[in-house]
Image 1 (cartoon, chains in turn cyan, orange):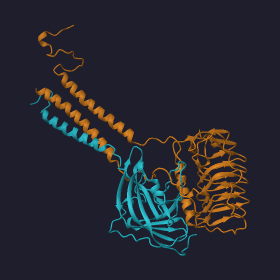
Image 2 (image 1 turned 180 degrees about the vertical axis):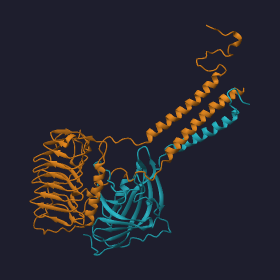
Image 3 (image 1 turned 120 degrees about the vertical axis):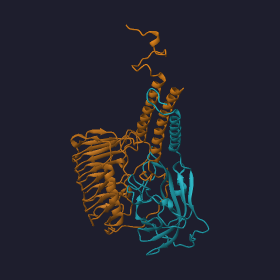
Image 4 (image 1 turned 30 degrees about the vertical axis):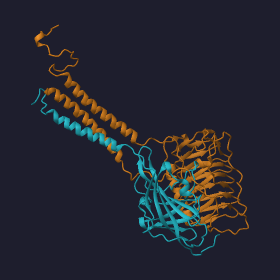
Length: 219
Length: 355
């Protein structure tokens, strides 16, 4: 079956190789196509089984900035800096991926409203301080130590992934009348073309305990 | 010229432009060419994909995030020493040193702390900001390290030796309120007596940064603009004023009758009027009066202020853990397609051979 140039194979061999390669090629390209993250994905929420103490009557505390954060469930224990606004009114982000920052143009933790703490999910080198934030479950505790020595504890109520194009800034930073804490980092798919993640992970939590060296009535 | 007799001529009629043996059929040639073409197209696609998925170079200077150091007018490592009636509109932090002297007669409108948690955070943040700013690329080289008498557009300017300001340096924002200027001095930064930095074209003091590999010294009555990030020390001579910050890592900050104002950034539309650098103090809160005892204790209770909702989604990730799965799939896909096209051409050729 060889022809003048020594090709010994039958055509069907080439056809099968062609078919296989073309299908692998097409499938890979389709899989490689960038897909946008969905707008909202709820990763965790309160169910009847989770324990979040009702915030009956917690004393009012003095306004004081957070300096230390601990989240036992994901092994976070680091310092809290302060973050302001950039010139274009976007929030600043920590310069160091191992510490977190408290947004200072909102209330400090323990006051009515939303205290917001932001941290990096990763750097170019590897995981950041909030790498495991999306694994938090309802009922997990977040502990914040304030500069005046007060220790505030918050219980997680919801973990939601929002696509950046529909980030609910009022919901995250605004007040709903309760003493809340939101933790924010990046998540979802990473867009290599822009160098940014497509979504943010927001952990919603509310105040459940306060212990203070000197419990102060509203200052 | 010799011609072939009719019986010896090849059986196909199209002219043979290639110096191949006559027994090769044109279909075979085009099959090989098709295969080669597919290979070439695959290689080209690989190269194109690599080009488009690799990072593009940064064109303009990117803003420096000062993090915890943002509200600080002065951060130092060893000591902070003031003589005379300096007025500081901003926070003062010292870490890890403990000695801040001269307040009063110096006046600070913000918090003052030494060897405490906020100062440590500010020091860490300014160190991190220094590394970012000192490493920014691409940059223009400033020859002989002499500024002054020139007008510069936004960008990164570097001198591997020192930077010296003699006269007036004008920074023109080009109508862009977010324009950033970064000056990188390999060793020292000095300014001559009476020299000044002037902003125009919408440039803002909050977007001007000076990284200094060793120490910075401002001459008397210098009118300076920008945040100085120095590895060692920063010294201001008599009556020099700064619309910016003095952030020194390991050394001291020394003041003599100076005015420091921490700049605030505004997103207001840029105007073309010249912004004069402040040589007079900004209004301080009326409670900073010399009758207060000189305490260096950090005040921990915050004043109440209205919440400002930021815009946009925070960018808190750089993708180091994201992997490059989709790029790899893209390469595999194109490679497989190339192989598939080549195999198809070989199959077509092989089939024709067998007909």
